Image 1 (cartoon, rainbow, N blue to C red):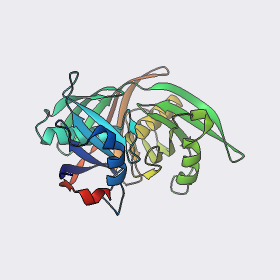
Image 2: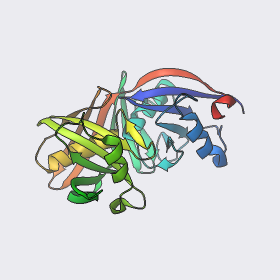
Image 3: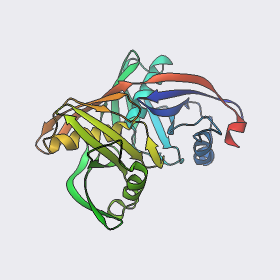
Image 4: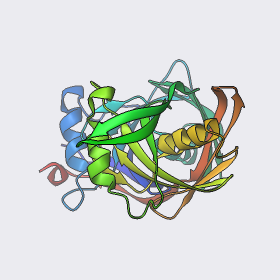
Length: 274
């Protein structure tokens, strides 16, 4: 295997391996194995997912986003911010540009080391779902913000069992067969939330989740607990900003803003896949 150039970029705590794949470097049949191996922490590069940039006829470029388990998903909010800064710094696109994703066209604007993206409108808002887990009934709220998310309100996000309850929610029959992400939030005031997220595909808690932050902002506003813009304090201690307009139960003009820091650049060698 030839060395594969990559950048490691962190979007408010979500970390990604970003690869310019406009000239293919990885065979399609090897992709799942490649991603699942290089995302291992301790034994390889380590990341929440891999982002591949490819040519597009609909936007400035197309991306493929693959979770750490090697499965491709439609959207990743923080990932879209990281790939936007990568594309700008590598002169693939200008500071304001568009990205083709499986969830639709994303509009991005790079502002120094921060990136704001406008994402497709959310779908399938469902409030006050009764979710039975291990004989207990929980009230959750659901929205698809490019990928599916359940939001739970909790008194103390630092004390909640994110892994246990998150994993049980992720695999719950209500959300079969695709599963869902699970978010745990507490409302600080009308503009501020604290959030922790269990991510499908990573199968663990991540330090931040952009689409989860959006789901939390939309749901808390639908329940009249917040009003946009909403600032969310992530598990990694970095804030994400979510803004949108509301028309009844419909939300539009969804934007997500936060940092996208370049951690390091390197080459993936064959031993990273062992």
